[in-house]
Length: 364
Image (cartoon, rainbow, N blue to C red; front, side, top):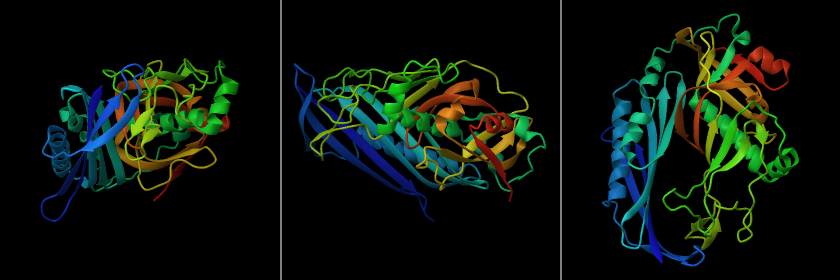
């Protein structure tokens, strides 16, 4: 049996005149063995960017440029992708879209990114454009309160997603799998659940080797789970995550992880220090297993003033200091796709005292 996959990719960059928009389309016809569900081969089909997926991609980018132009923040670039899965009759089975904008603010460059299943039209409104208003020039840089080290830290979804992705990598990399196997069943975190989600859409239900594409818990209620089993037919690819690559002519793992963090809900403490945005252009993941978040921060009781705060530590160790999750779940798309709420952590003093973090304020 055959199926068609369409990937429309677009890039928008501002110019002195109209923004420069480029959209490309990649259309593949794939054969799937009816008995095993395994992809047996593919061929590239001619396609036009005027097709629906291409039009949706261009629309996402032009709407994002319009929203950025309506505020003081300056759009540096935006990328979008719309992927469609169609059956042998050309009928739409599933659609997924991603949008990522790099925006220059008075506090530095930040990323706005989100993704979603279904209609791409809601993605532009899902980005927190209004929150950028408080970063309008002139940038109100303030000194943090004298007691900031004793105040709880809150990672808003954008920086929380970096921490979640780092924690997942520490459990799924080659060395991380060995660690996960050794710690399997042990409760090392608060009652948080970290789940690896399949890249195959739920309407399809199987990966490109025919295995069921199911969510796989990496951490469940604070307990480390055994590492997901690897497919015997594809080296290094977990079962249910196999993806056919036309140019390679074989199976590869998904290019991006899809993750979800859930756990007990709480409220943002009224005196919290909120890490709202990560400043771009700085290395986040380091070879020693630590993450370094250089963030634009503010206090919840003084939301108009900003300062720069750096949080560094190993992701699992940082998550040990979690007190709960606050606010609505948010889909954050950057180098990974992470759905998370704001993450409420202990204060800098407690985290540093436990040896789990180094927290510093950068003065201008």
